[in-house]
Image 1 (tube, helix red, strand yellow):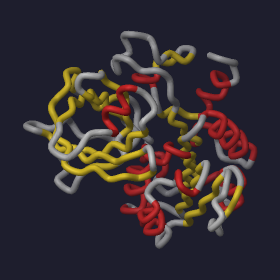
Image 2 (cartoon, rainbow, N blue to C red):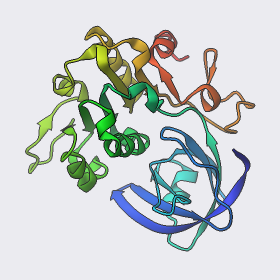
Image 3 (cartoon, rainbow, N blue to C red):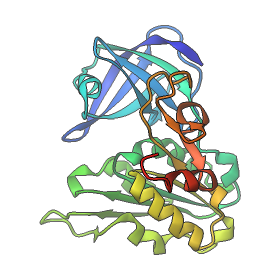
Length: 270
């Protein structure tokens, strides 16, 4: 893990939605250590500052990183505006990953809401690449509108191997797919709850509702894995900004089991 930012160059900028881009970064010199699916980096956009960004992919060289960025604040707007050839500072890897070994031999259920699909994409790619080691693979995706859906072409490719279902809260006039919240899709999930591992990322209210329903359906709480979000400033557990009860999410998360998350997320404004 690098506590100091290393220089990376933007080699590709791909528009995902009106306010979201995927940036491909290659190291100027030595790369950071490998990132496990679910871990995050602290990305510095000169001169605005740095923000935590989940890794949404790696490059074919194995040295580069892909980050999917939504322009919502000063730093993310600066990163969103980057073009090929410009540089950022990156440090990491930080945090816990998706704990893939726990899923071996099990059905895999991925539930993503909005931008939560970004940190889940490396997990989906890894699981599909190792398909013989798993049972069925289901990917359930929710978004506010069809225009907010990420990775549309790639989602269709996943559908060749996995069960992929997509829903939106507010359909466009030409939308012919499902309408509703992502929990409405859970009947598409595997029917072997005792042999299923679930991975969730998205708005907290969505993850709470989904996790509770999956446990009600028989999936053991430790095998319902969530990626939690709180304000992160240092990435090393020293500033305390990302505290959630006894957890410092930059160190003890962001991925935790529902058995640990449930009592903490039940406390209002914790």
